[in-house]
Image (cartoon, rainbow, N blue to C red; front, side, top):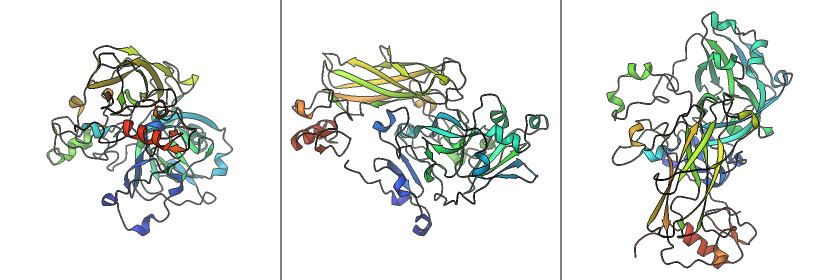
Length: 457
């Protein structure tokens, strides 16, 4: 495969280079699109978002510091009540508990932030994520509630006024989540030491991380150092500060918002229903009368199951329903445990009279009938979080005079379905397709990927 180098966003690099010499570069797939390299924040391309389990090396990355180097033999996680001595558990100690497996989707609250950044509404604060700051993995570990029991923490703690657990990473990133999430039946919180059947990669929390399913990704703390049961939530920018607070659309400047108002707002725990289109790529060309194969994901937080994905190829004037695939039978409708996205597929025909552009949109509906807003403008916010508006791609109808050949088409005979043909010797530098001749590969690139393909002569 022709590897592409990770984008080096040096103008956003933090600290001295010497602080970053132990980064796990080998874990990072060459196709990740990096928004910053120090710390490493990157999202996968669309092809990696079409599988139920995100492929190795392509799970999105959200870091705040250099990745810690941890000796797993000497490692201990410390658990207990605030003001009391914390009990320590080694990885060997945790191996005595029953291992649990769970498929969980993590999503950054800034997913699709880039769509908020318009001349009309203004720039937002944060990394310009597209639709890829979301990924899914099978996590293996032990129930946090069982380890709590061994540490002397029971449901009685709530009666004594304890309302939160505060999670501290080795690098001192810290947040709080409600204690009831850990203690409730089917809360499914894990201390995880495996990702997709292998030891946690360093980028994803080696040797141990917390999994808080149904919550935003920021609550599943990596490189966990200690878990403290507290009566109040912790301080800090990731809990009481602006990081995970959604302001009103008319609040355009942070300096105009009182600090006390920001601290009074609750931090985001759950992701509202959202969806995206991952096939075809934005700007792809389609032919009138051609088959249009669509794919995407849909996800809702708090364990709510997606029950429907509506798809429209005329910008929302008419609708049809996509076929849905779930991660497992345990994540069924009204289970309260739908911790992972659904993958959806839909096939349509480009109208024979289509011309110009074709706007394809999708919207998800969960089992409480929550639906997505149709437009980003009413939910615009300064932090650029929770853009849950309709997923959308705009396609170009016609080939701009370029004549396609069968050899240059995708493996199933359509020009939009990239990532299928893999048996040739000439590989497209933008996707995974291979072709039998260099001419076919170049024609495919020109038709599908050339950034100047739609410019007027």
